[in-house]
Amino acid sequence: MENFKRYLTESRAGILNSYRILNTESVSPDLAKVTVFVERRLNRLRAKYEYTYTLRKVPDEQGGFWKVSNLVAKVKK
Image (cartoon, rainbow, N blue to C red; front, top):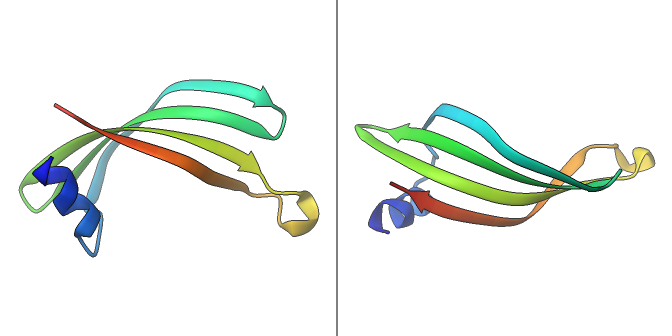
């Protein structure tokens, strides 16, 4: 828990070592739920996380990009 607290309060997130998509669920053409596994390194500290979030597509007239929302982060061992 201390590692995750430190990660959230750092001015930078560290170096991304690995990013792997574990699961995707297409709720609708403009909405998807995604689960990913992430490994980061900050100095000598390695941390592993599982993120679950929702991707919601912004209308094309507003840019058409995908917005991340409802982020849940879990510290993995």
